[in-house]
Image (cartoon, rainbow, N blue to C red; front, side, top):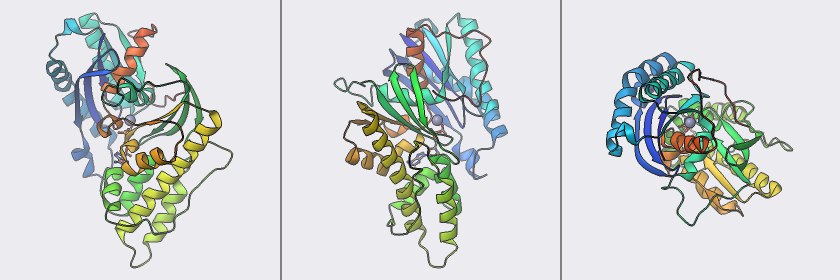
Length: 329
Ligand code: KG4
Ligand code: ZN
């Protein structure tokens, strides 16, 4: 079954063709980073206008790079939330128009569920590695830091979330404080490689809860850099370590308590090398993490998730609408 995935929830216009939920046949991502970086962050109106300009060429490329025709496509999966309303609208409306014109079934996909399904794509899981349920999913992106128990395909129970900034958002804000540019996660990671995590920064453990909090850490960084003689690289490394420390410690503890079979990482922050290293070193159960290009926003993960929707008869109608504040579990 070949599914066309469409993703426009934030600042990447993406389309992909995926076979049977695991094999990437094509995966096209048009990033808007260069456009937004001059403003130091995403400008929603600019993002939706850019999606409008790019979406049709991106879909055409995904079909042609897959070496298929529309007759070979069995269904369309599109992100309908969470995300920026104006951005989501572009993907959902284009997907509905194509579904109607080509008489294809369509399924609306939760962007957070899609991030988790990046772990099923063939490049991340080899044939021997099978995801076993229940597993614990840590979704760490620009807008979310969610800890979700996955009991089976499509069965999610949210255990924890961020009470303020998401991990990616905290990294983006820290990079702005340190004048490292946008997006902040990769900039902090690069600056960290030149420094040492020698500066003392707080961790919000929120004991007895699976929730996260990163805004106090961001304020502490801001106070730290007011002092003279602080090295930007050391500040970046110390901040990165504080974020990673909390994410890893709390997730590994929850995995032990809940006796899950595996931990699945996903979302843009999961592209961070220190995060993966620390998880692999401290978890007693196997940890899966997609390759970096499948951690950040893409449409292959949307198509992989859509495959499972179609398998279980979750087909949307033409009244499918965007839900900017959609949550998972
Ligand atoms: O999942 P994603 O691409 O988009 C959203 O759904 O939000 O995540 C974007 C976030 C940004 O905050 C970005 O700074 C962060 O992921 N990120 C990283 C890395 N690459 C992207 N954070 C840490 N290390 C990275 N290598
Ligand atoms: Zn995302």
